Amino acid sequence: MISAVVLAAGASTRMGTQKLLLPVGGEPLARRTVRQVCDAGFDDVLVVVGSDWEHVLVALDGLPIRHAVNAQYASGMGSSFRTAVSHLGESAAAMFALADQPFVTSNEYRTVLDTYRHQAPAIVSVRYGDVMAPPHLFESELFPELAQLQHGARPVLQRYHDRTVVLQFPPDLLVDIDTPEDYELVKSRLSM
Image 1 (cartoon, rainbow, N blue to C red):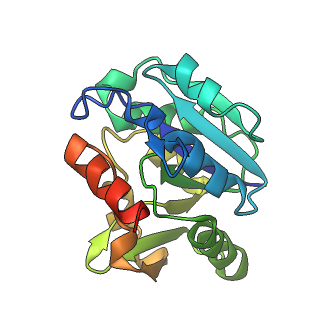
Image 2 (spheres, one colour):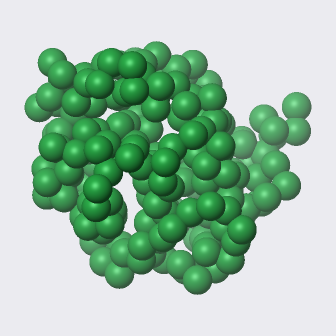
């Protein structure tokens, strides 16, 4: 079984309101992202929620997912990795995606999945131009190391760079919504 994990636990402190509930292209941001992941063909989709988790789950109602609540979300992204790993059970590998990347679509998530299925590296990671950013897929032997992270996955990506397949995605897909300015930019791009 190959899982996808969507990290959706953050408190949106820079936005000033729960960004995952903001409308993007006619649906809440969290639903837009999770729907794209669900459409990519993974065997299992786990959404890690934290801040405002009840409202986020309402926004995801009807999607074929399961969820885990990260009660420690305020301590940083490492706590979401730990929460996810503790719920991955029999998964042979898991892709970790961020809930606030509105321009990454099911096509990109499926490319990550297909690359793992055909080449079976320890890691499939993504570059947008010069920037390495999620989604990243890790085989299960690396789950214990992911569970030790304090913040993002960069230490694990660096440690196993020789066992990684790196995919190149268009740089204009790399937009995450952290601030009101980011949100306005996304809305203007979607209205073009």
